[in-house]
Image (cartoon, rainbow, N blue to C red; front, side, top):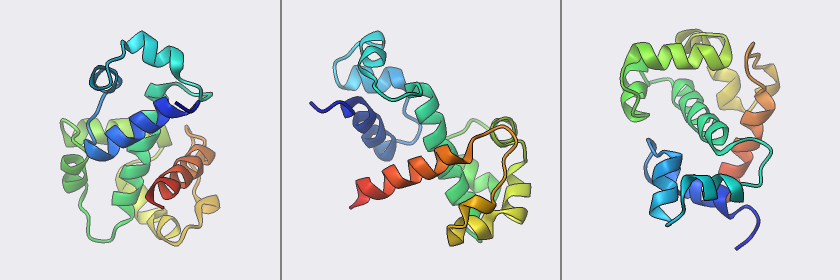
Length: 137
């Protein structure tokens, strides 16, 4: 297997089931969680990678003109609206509604450099988007 096989397994599992966990991926592929972490070769943890995947998916949904936050919460399998908003604001420094109003057009147009988050490095979002695009080819 290539060096980034663990990343690919996690990405594939995320695409199949959005509420996937590291524990579930490890179990599905007959690894212990610690072995999965030991095989991980990226400079951020599998948990952080999964968090960024979820955030990118949330940003895509929020950038859609017709999506309500309540529907996004359901699509992303968050337990409730309050938890999603708290999670989103913790990562980005802004509320999901504020993102929709201020940045969704930039996101849809691919003008990512215009998006400013207080608590999150936007470069990670570009990186994940590139990975997702390469996986779809």
